[in-house]
Image (cartoon, rainbow, N blue to C red):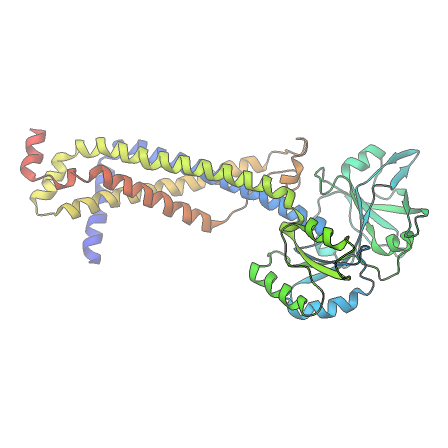
Length: 433
């Protein structure tokens, strides 16, 4: 069986080499079709990955444990961590955060005033691995003995004329609704014009607690960071199930606003807690991600159809020119199934060669795009990594695409040659006479 397949394969290779002029167009169709599809997939996956990574930095990881009462009060985070930690993998890191609504607060620097959307109280030392992923244009996320440090986005720094090392005054409201001010050192300025970063500043959590009048242990978010990987659906469900035995938990949801509605009502017993996934946190962006995925899917379907139909149609012409060759095959005793196998091997080898070259071409296109600084495009920074479109390489998708193209194209070729391979030697020679 193997020797016969090898015979058909060798015959197919010789046929391709002898008739290579006829196969150039088929090779080109496959090459450019695959290149466009894969380049689209690489770039789109890179954009989606950039959104997810920015969200991961903004939300402190892949999952957030939050709740309590209307004040999002987790006053003894250590007790919560002790109950959560046994139910997650050892490589998961926990970060205690204090998100402060900054809509009524402002920065002051040399007579200038500017508002922010949110202040994130963080422990820069605990989260140093996470902050390594930030793209700093000046300084970095450092910790001082006084804990009076913060980092801000580049657009805000440019508006105020601030540089790393400068001191800025922050005005905010305390838990008792009194106005308070604090002086902070800007240790780092990070590049981010997206909705996740432009109007977000990160402040040492101890300073933010002191300035707002909260207790020294106050936390309103416990973030679970799974590092380079993301938690599987099974892991999330298992953690939710375990936490339901420890706390009054809100069911898993893809819309955190549903949890907020329950948290702020006067009916549901408090305290109540929730495990919020990254997808739930970026629910509003999911439509954009789905739109990107749909466009890529549409491009893939159209180009796969063009490859399959184009090769199938071209094969009709090629096969008709090779009637004599088919007659010779049949005259020496080859069955119609054997003739089919020769043509199918030809098709497969052409697809394989075209696909391999298409992959290389797609990588070159993606590499070229990745060198373009696109951060100047308004609101596009959310899809960028350090101002550039960085492709995300997933070989499993390449193999899937190869399988889809191979199956559809081979079926198309089989449909095209279904009658010709059954021709008798006499009819074949009569046709060419």
